[in-house]
Structure formats: structure tokens, C-alpha cells
Image (tube, rainbow, N blue to C red):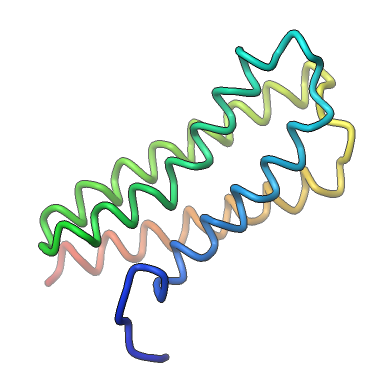
Length: 122
């Protein structure tokens, strides 16, 4: 693995960005009346994942990083829940993208948990 020089080198941040991009694609097909409701919540939750990883990294202490990783994990689970709701409401038109983002959420969850645990041990 290469040296980590910035938060952009963190795989959990990179995967978080991938989740944001797919999430924005999914919400394009949502009903117009959802733009200030579920669509907005989904976008905010997705953006919160890599944003909190970056903010925690920028705080320059393991304690702060752990705190913001924990917030990022909460946003990830919030996003997963919101996407499940959107799917059940039949707002999601492209199930291929939904399945891909669901898979990424699962991977990100495992990676965040492992990263958080590694910080707790240091």
C-alpha cells in the first residue's frame, strides 16, 4: 500500500466519493416533489460520508479522526436506510446502479469499521 499523504489517499474516502457519484445518479429519476424531501436527504447523507472522513483527517489527531469516522459511519447507515425507503417507494428506476451502490455501501461499512478499530488500537 502506498504512503498516505492526504485524506484523498484513504481508500475509505475514495469509496465514499464513488458512493456520492452513484447516489446523485440514482436521485436524478426521483419525482420532482421529492427534491426538497428524500432526494435532498439522500444527497446530504452521501456527501457527509467522505466529507467527515476528510474533516477528521484534517483535525490531525487520532481521537478527532475516530470521532469523524464514527459520524461518517452514521451517515453511511442513514444513506442505506434512505435508499431502501426510496426503493420501496419505487423512486429508483435503475436497479443496476442501486445494486452497485448497495454493494459499495456494504464494502464501505466494513472498511470504516476496520479503520475505526485500527485507530482505537493505536
